[in-house]
Structures are given as C-alpha cells and as structure tokens.
Image (cartoon, rainbow, N blue to C red; front, top):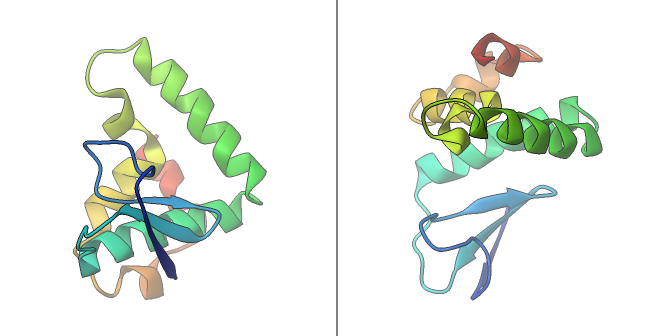
Length: 104
C-alpha cells in the first residue's frame, strides 16, 4: 500500500486515512504497522463494495450515526471492524468477505 505524506490529509486529529487504496498522512507523521493494517482492512472493504459503494455506504452510515448517541465516526461498521482487528497481524489472511456487516 502506498503511503503519501502531505500537509492537507488527513484532517487534524487523525494520523492517517485511506483513499482509493493509498494511505495519506501529514508530513513527518510516523505511520505504525497497526495503522497500515487498519487502512488495509478498509482497502479490502472498499474492493468488496466496488469502491463507489464503499464511499456511499460510509457517508450514509456516518450521517445516520450522527443522529445517534456516541461518536459517529467510531460507530461506523467499517471503522469498528478495522479498530477491532488492527492489532491482529493475521486478520487479513483469516478475514471472510463482507465481515464488516457483523459490526452493523
């Protein structure tokens, strides 16, 4: 996975973000192995949903979660799967397709 350092993405408060299979990080931000695993889980989710579907679902689910109690971002099913498994070095080998649905 390609890592791109820049001054714009991600927004402050986040260390990295994945867009279209590339990890964006702020200048001089150290990207940890668990961050790469987290973003790699998103890459798998993205390809399962044929890219556009991933971004549409992500945005719609975020809007719905805004209306609920708690942190909307951390409550998104894609994020829940990624955070729950970012420390498991074998997760991507073991992961079944559409696993994020268990986190809805």
